[in-house]
Amino acid sequence: MEKHLHIICHDVPFPPDYGGVFDLFYKIKTLHEMGVLIHLHCFEYGRGKPPELETYCQEIRYYARKEGHKGFSHRLPYIVCSRSNGDLLDNLLKDDYPILMEGVHCSFLLNDDRFAGRKLLLRVYNVEHLYYRQLFRASISPLKKAYYLHESWNLKKYEKQIANKATLIAFTGKDVDFFRDQFGAREIHLLHAFLPFQQVNIEEGTGCYCLYHGNLSVEENERAATWLLKEVFRQLDLPLVIAGKNPSHRLARIIEKHPHACLIANPSEEEIRDVVRKAQVHTLPSFNNTGIKLKLLHALFNGRHCVVNEAAVCGTGLESVCHVCTDASSFRQAISEMYNRPLTREETTSRKQLLSDLFNNEKNARQLIQWIW
Image 1: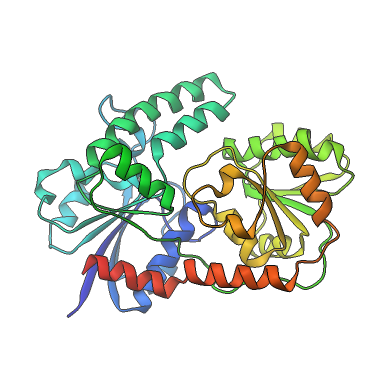
Image 2 (image 1 turned 45 degrees about the vertical axis):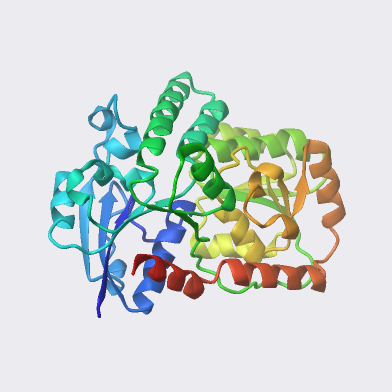
């Protein structure tokens, strides 16, 4: 029997060039390879309509996102209301195939009684209201702080409201526990991220710099990079490379003031792979303890030592293959110790065993198929 599946994406999942679409694209690709006929629905607001997606999908439909004031509602979070679309609902109602909503962002249909009898699955990237509360704390803009706080309030009410309207699928055990304990979710599963890398591939020897990489247009990532510069590397005579998309002028100015730091702005996929593989120490603090950090997985599969704080690995199961620090002083100590020490064979073996078990795309696709059908 043919297996048809609707997948709703909050953004166009190609190219897979930032953390929010890694899981989307490689899930679509793996499900296609396992015979699932995918009906893809994307909200397009700047990434175009790439023909590459047609290789993996039975059909693809694109929808405009309501941006600015048109996407605001007193009742719904902005990330949900801005993706409410009547044409999308009408297209989904043309058949009775299961529906996978990628993120709370795409869950508007859960407010519509016409979908009450459908098989509905919701991929929760993290606990969104906590994520927005932490964005509120990280932001220095009064206007953005007001938006993040309002969105956090709306999301908390909304996440509780929809917790039992679909089968939930979380990235981390911590998020599974939160939805069960705080929102009373009765049907929620753990499914690790789908990734572009499936084998640990670490260059032998030692690298020649420390690295922080990520989407630098995200305030939390800019805050992490700034913290490293001011609190950690100011007292270390070691080179630090900061690489990522769309760094602000403010961050670029801060980097310029540090003689041992340099910025790689908007690297290509090939460039970021090369930068990751050549680094000796990946310094990846986080000020957000929800979800899973794709940049950390990239470093663990392809890089050497990973020095993180507790928020970066909490609830992920990755604690045993990272050097977990508690403050700037312990970051400096760990970085200094790791900078000239090659990764041991035992460390590499531990990574291979853990990562191959948790992040096996084919294994995780089979599990998802079992839950749906």
